[in-house]
Image (cartoon, rainbow, N blue to C red; front, side, top):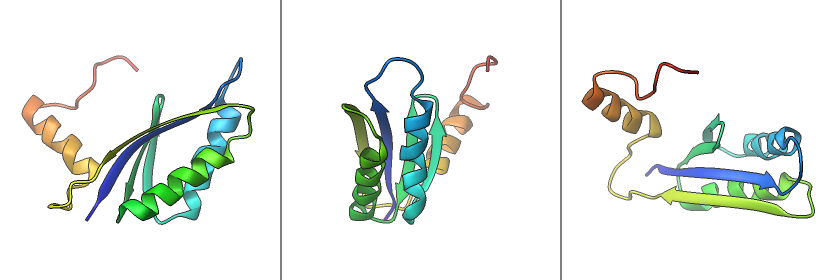
Length: 104
């Protein structure tokens, strides 16, 4: 089974959050998960929900701030092994192109 999640961990601070967000992303390296960071959060893939939640907890705890805001969305489709990349590929096939605009 593949569990896919979208995670956003952010300190509640003024100014750039990059230093603290980097700590959260780096914490994922300690776990057997695949991940891709985007401007709004990180997509994580794990073999089971327990491993995923351990990685999420580590990412949350890695951020050093008086207040930390964490958003987590989990897709635990228990009847298939579909990866995040395959889900994106299915959208690309329907669109006939990459699912993004021309702007960067």
